[in-house]
Amino acid sequence: MPLSRSAHVDDFCRRNLPPESQWPDFLLHAPELNYPVRLNCAVELVDAVASRLGDDRRCLLTPGGETWTYGQLRDTSNKIAKVLTATYGIAPGNRVLLRGPNSPWLVACWLGVIKAGGVVVTTMTMLRAGELATIAEISEANFALCDYRFVDELQMPAGPKLRELVEYGGDGGLTEAIKNVTPEFEAVQTAADDVALLAFTSGTTGRPKSTMHFHRDVLAIADTFSAQVVKPTENDVFVGTPPLAFTFGLGGLVIFPLRAGAASLLLERATPEELADHIANHKVSICFTAPTAYKAMIARGKVGQLASLRRAVSAGEHLPESTWRQIERATGIKLINGIGSTEMLHIFVSAADENIRPGATGLPVPGYVVDVLDDEGNPAPDGVPGRLAVKGPTGCRYLADDRQTTYVQNGWNITGDTFIRDADGYFWYQGRNDDMIVSSGYNIAGAEVEEALVAHPDVVECGVIGTPDDDRGQVVTAVVVLRPGAEPSDAMTKELQDFVKETIAPYKYPRRIAFAPELPKTTTGKLQRFKLRDFYQDFA
Image (tube, rainbow, N blue to C red; front, side, top):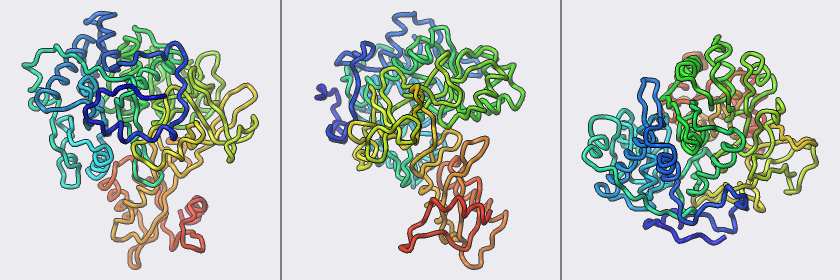
């Protein structure tokens, strides 16, 4: 379909969309997906809700007792948009990098950038300077809004080359700039198919991929999965552990509650025990987190703290049937399982209530069509493993990336997962069909960890894989060949782990390391990654 007239003065995103011939098929025929041509998703998520339910309705909460209303969030995001345009010269289409933990301020900045017509690039606080520089390079973002406590990595020589770095949340910077600004601001009338956000996902090669999502996509995930599977009401309180830089967290903690007129309790970080306490203290009714967190809350005797939950969504890693039944027996909660991807923006296979089949991921979310394909791209028979393929109102558009034609084939989004569909149409997860490691919901590229490890002077070469783990699904596991004279030891293991934590985001470090005299390779010298699992067992 032809694109609408863009509101972007800076046409970077339009220029870097993949050719339409490489797009997946988009399914937008459902009545709830019939969006107007001009659409600013931030206005729909906040201003429209304040008009419908009232300015005083509570919106964003913090564990410390802070409460933002819809009127306050509307006004603050308007002020931010006004300062971005009038003071800092942000033009429609400019990319703005955001860095900070989950907080009302981060949400206000996210909305403010979009109201100003900008494109948000939200990053995790765990990322190091070099990783941030790569994201800024790919997105050509030279302006950043950053929580005042997390500016260090952006200011390092290895960090991104920014025109301007503005702090928020402290005494100065953006906090000071909006004090004397009136809240009246007319949001840019973006097109429904203007890019609103760039969301980064790990690539198996280690170089991240930027996915491009339109204003209509933001609303589509709320009007499909959230509205028709989770079914929130304006009286719900949401909570979760994923950062807003993950689209799982962005949807579950911002887009879905705001679209429903509900409230969201934003946690900067929380252990499973702390999460359970927050659920009890704030009478939370909907939770988004990974299966490991639900298991940990039960294991630590926190069942009684979960009494207020009426919905619990699990995604980011496989949910085994045994875990589902353990949680259901202990709490009475029927976990809503699901699979999504950054490319698809959120969950597209799931089930709730009487549609749940324990152990299965679920059924296609209304609005999506899902199939299992063989290696030739033909539908696989029921009961036969194949590649998961999906179409819907959202889909993969990589920013100027040759990997577009790998993810999108013949109109299908090919997610990299192996599934079986049963005779009743339920989809059952079998595993990944690429080298991506999924640990506690994080996608980790083995190649990136390998690159960090071989930078250590004692490492000659290494191979990194995921190995099974009861708590995390998988853990990052390295088989390392040391230089002559360097000895394997517990001290060397810790030294290498600490080295990786200093080089890339700490959640990527290898929790298991085995030392070997050599790595399994082909006759041409290529690492045989599929043999590393057995190799690890031999030398662990």
